[in-house]
Length: 152
Image (cartoon, rainbow, N blue to C red):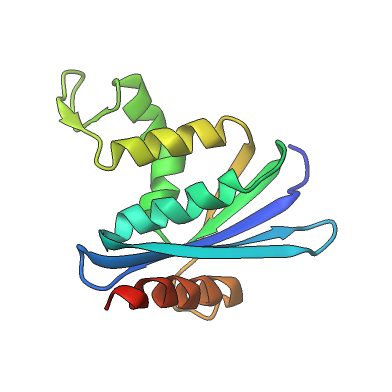
């Protein structure tokens, strides 16, 4: 696989679940070291939705196809991208056990948006532990929390 060109650090946060939520990303272009960051939020949402929005907004900001490493502390995002999404798609975006499962994937519109964005890139997903001293993850957390505080 080609070397990673871009690292996308992401995080989502919520005050209550549901409650006011924020998302944030830091996009690092590895060859030049240039960085871009952005954050936003919603007045009533869930933590999982904010975790997904951070990745979506980061991927949307890419100007061309490239090899992206997504770095997230969210097991929901990491497992969703690497394990669950291929099965969900094969089952018509349904989850659960058995071929006739009728449970719709939660946050379906966001997963489908993420799937479309990932199809334009070469994506690798790396899980890091949250609040464990990872500098970019900690910064994304600060940005996401600041983004939702305007609704408190």
